Image (cartoon, rainbow, N blue to C red; front, side, top):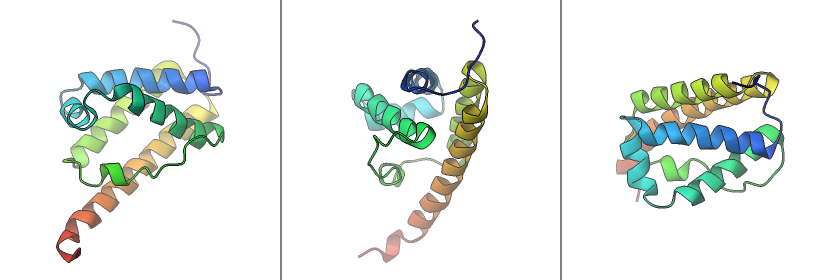
Length: 130
């Protein structure tokens, strides 16, 4: 295996995203959720994820979406987020080392935490939506 480098280019982002989502698609807990939602649109999803992480980690502003709304009504709980984060961190550790790799893991953990809080809030307030 080649020596791991930091996440510095769009090619690095693509390697991270492709490797990570390959694991997600095979994961017993996560695959059903992702495959049900994404179906045959994996190329589009991966392209969106390239742009998202390129924006977040490389500060090359190519993603202009809102990441939370597509996740708001997914049938997920803490175990899904824990598995997602474990696979993400495992992928980073296998492929990269350095400040951006560390930042990627930190940002993923913060996103997982924020999404869980927002999903819980969303579910708790659904009866108040007019």
